[in-house]
Image 1 (tube, one colour):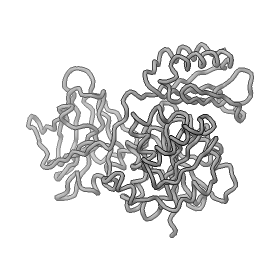
Image 2 (cartoon, rainbow, N blue to C red; image 1 turned 60 degrees about the vertical axis):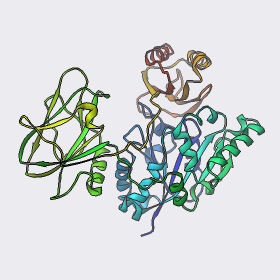
Image 3 (cartoon, one colour; image 1 turned 90 degrees about the vertical axis):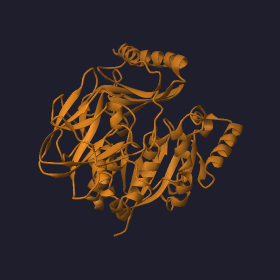
Image 4 (cartoon, rainbow, N blue to C red; image 1 turned 30 degrees about the vertical axis):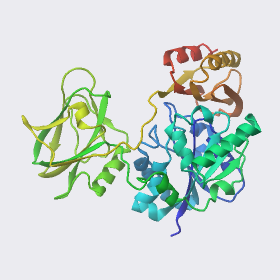
Length: 446
């Protein structure tokens, strides 16, 4: 069976990915395209911004495509294969905060994915106007440029010829092998995006020697010799208010760090977690990880019922030492017979957060414009991205709101139809004051 080509579309927040995606979906190029997308934010906006979204777009469950990408991506790709006759090309749009290498890694380290799909290329959009604000401090921005097969310098109409020349020289120094295109409103030949001819694996390995080493969403795996019966997992307060864990039986002589076992855990980890209360039970061989509350003083205790004697794998979101995690059989401490730490594949700038606001009722457009204009004058450098779908007073159509730093725009979109009307607005940036943003947005309501 012929492999299905996959294009990864990436770029920092506000670079124009959705604009290019809509162009691809609307132009006549003879390809039937399935789209998989992910967002960094509390409210899903992007699917509503994509044309034909009801039929074309599949959303990731997780807020960060690079943290838990492979399990979620493999699950969606597997579901897509059930309707193989409906498409002949797949486009994966990453969040603007994603390192694209784990996405690309999926099509090389997983045997099933490697047999079914071929990575045609990584296409990175670069915001010519605003990239200089992020390129020094954001590892994601650098990775997006370094791994690209095609670099699209977008919004060239917003910079001078000298600024564009300097940017082109800089990205070329970072990635001399990528094809560089200039664009306004992401207007580039579709063939340059969808027919790249193959991802450059050799260059990827030069950029990141560990590229083919699987990255996992958990930081630790322990192997325990267990007997049938009850065990207790104990932990103290740690750096997060909760910690995810997953427990599974192993074959005789197996270890939690074995590739097959770790890959199975990774796929399970992609499912939404089941949160249990204090004293609750961690199911063995469940279909989802378990989220254990860990905040507050005192020791937290949870039960594990082992149905048969043998080996048990335990995977934890963080290192056990961070939560003083222990496994007890009665009052006896049970130590793992083998354990392995998995280095975190990447870190995000912890200051970058999102604020999502859902508002019922109609919006007064004049109040909104006054508020947003004042907000961006005062806080524009901290607000990387704004996007939303607005219910504007008196209009039968949705209004699409888009903003990048101090630039913003809104435009009339398709009719609301029979569904509920409400406004959703998302901010992504630094030093975001949720309470202040929510209160100000509410004051724009009619």
